[in-house]
Amino acid sequence: MYAGHQVVRAYNGEAQAENEFDKINRELYDSAWKSQFFSGLMMPLMGFVGNFGYVAVCVLGAVLAANGSITFGVIVSFMIYIRLFTQPLSQLAQVFTSLQSTLAASERVFDFLGEEEMEDESTKLCRLKSVQGDVEFRNVRFGYDANKTIIHDFSAKVTAGQTVAIVGPTGAGKTTIVNLLMRFYETDGGEILIDNVPIRNLTRENVRDQFCMVLQDTWIFEGTLRENIVYSKKGVTDAQLDEVCRAVGLAHYVKSLPQGYDTVLDEQTSLSSGQRQLVTIARAMIESAPLLILDEATSSVDTKTELLVQKAMAQLTEGKTSFVIAHRLSTIKHADLILVLKDGDIIESGNHQQLLAQNGFYAELYNSQFEQVS
Ligand SMILES: Nc1ncnc2c1ncn2[C@@H]1O[C@H](COP(=O)(O)OP(=O)(O)OP(=O)(O)O)[C@@H](O)[C@H]1O
Ligand SMILES: [Mg+2]
Image (cartoon, rainbow, N blue to C red):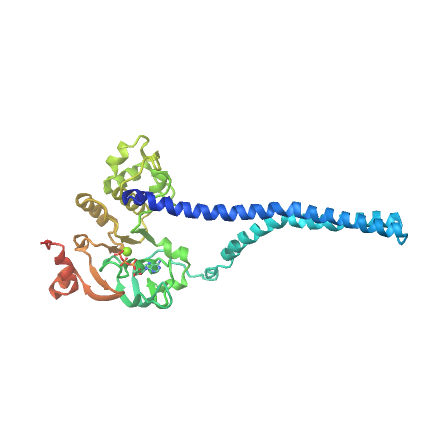
C-alpha cells in the first residue's frame, strides 16, 4: 500500500486501504498480545511451582519429623534440592520466547541459504577479447517455467555490423530474447553463439562485457548524475560527458541543474520518464561495448528528441552489431534485418521494403500506425 500510494489516492481507495490496514494491524495486535501474555506468564508460573514445592516439603517434612522418621537436616537438604531443580527450569522458560522467534527467523535464513547455487564458472577458460560481432541463434528454446515454453524454435544469424530490429506484439518474447542473449537466463535448448563461440562456454562476466544495453525499465539509482551516466567505467572526462549529453539532448537539462553533473538524483530532483531513458542511453554511449541492445530505449521520448538520439546512435553503432526493439516502427525502418516475432517464433524476416512487399503481419503492423480510430 505504501509503494502504491499514488494508486490508492487516484482511485479513492483510502477507505479500503484503511480497512485492510486495520485488519492486518489487529492480527498483529492479537498475536503480539498472546505471545507477550504467555511469555509473561512463564516466570510467575515457574515461581509458583518452586514455592509450591517448598510448601509441600515443609508440610510433609514436618509430619515425618514429628513422627521421628526423618531428621531436621533431611528437610533442609530437600529444600536445597528443590531450588537446584527449579532454577534451570525457570531459566529455560526465560529463553523460551527468544528461542521461538529465533526459530521463525532461522526458517527464512535457511530458505535463503538453501537456494540453488549458480553454476560454477571458474573452470571456463575460454575468453572473448576483441569481438567482431557475429551473433547466431540456433534453435533456441526457452520458458521461464519448465512447463510453459515461450520461445519455441528461434534461429537467426546476424553478421557483424548489422542493425537488427525485433518487432512484434506485446508479450511476444522480445525482451526474453534479450535476456537470453545477456545470459540472465539459460536456454532450455539450442545455442547462442557470439563470433561462433557458444556463450555457454564463456563466463557470464565475459559475455556481459561485450554488450551495452538500454533496458525497457530504466534503471536510475540514487547518486549524482555523473555516477549514473559513468557507471563502471574509468577515466571519463567532462568533455566526453558534455559530448554525450549533447548527443542525446540532455545538455540543456544538465545546465538547468544547480550543481550540474554533481547534482544528486533523489526524490527532489526526479527525472521525467523520457529524461530517465536519455540518461540510460548516455550511459550506454559512454560504455561503448561492441554489441548494443536497445529495448524500447526511446519509447517515452518525444519524436524530435528521438530523432536526435537516433542520429547519435547511428554514429555510435557504426560498425557495431546492434539489436533494437521498438514499437514505433519508424525507429527501425532503416534496420538491416527486421525479425517479426509472434508468440516466440519468427514469422517474417527481411528489411523494411521486403516486408512491406510481402504484405503480411509486418505490413499490417506498420500500416496500423496511420489508421484513424473512427
Ligand atoms: N520473469 C518472468 N517470469 C515468467 N514469465 C515471464 C517473465 N518475464 C516475461 N514473462 C512472460 O514471457 C512472455 C514474453 O515476455 P517478454 O517480456 O519477452 O515480452 P515482450 O515481447 O518484451 O513484450 P513488450 O512488448 O510488452 O515488452 C510474456 O507472456 C510474459 O508474461
Ligand atoms: Mg519487452
